[in-house]
Image (cartoon, rainbow, N blue to C red; front, side, top):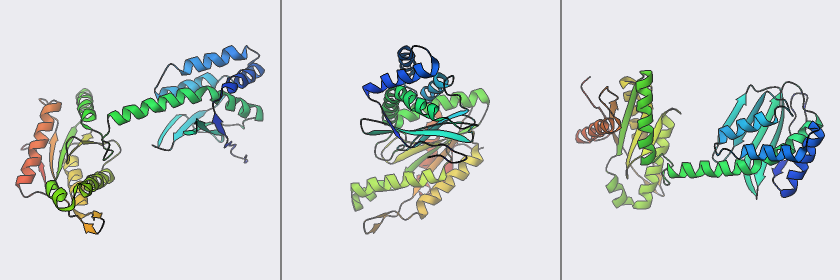
Length: 310
């Protein structure tokens, strides 16, 4: 389907053994070179990485001499992520990708002038070289995510927290920027499990993560490090910003209606906030935030305490 501004192809690209031959024939017609060798070269180059961002960039570079373009855009729906290189232009050529019945997302290239019919056909054949490397990269990305994600709530897990804190502290020191940590514990969570059941408790955990996620920025990082215990790592955030965010989260959890079946489960959280100091490492900043959180619990729960006297 084409319009005066945009050309778009909604075909599915499915990798089959015969497609490599079609791709080599298309390349030979376009370039006047040995099409099979060029096709195999592209496939080989694309197999050098399992990083999705790098893979899309390499693909764009490999096809640029055959199909000049200003930008390349890759979108994946579940889970959603987007990779874009270059400046988006007026005209586009787009295909849905799939392999063995599995959706692999959508690939789009754009430029200032329309794509010819021959170029759209060539693009379709070139995408055959991308399908299997892309599927492998997506599987790798999924495995990494699973290894660093809490399966119940979807928050990052403790292993991810340990790695991320070391990295963020190093970046904070290198760029001389503030870094804050919030430790959060759901109040009286054992009573929730005892009174409403563990399935209801799991629901509350997921609902609380939802409340936190609605409050934090995309740059903030949420981790579940214990049963009902969470941390939020705030890059480039000082005491005032961290305390404001913690209070917003506290209020959101306390005022939300967590309804499980016919039961409305009252829920609150206690939080401690710590900011990085010259003496801190990942262990000590966590310990200070954790101690402040326990001070919040001792002070009647459902409140926020800051670690330190400044």
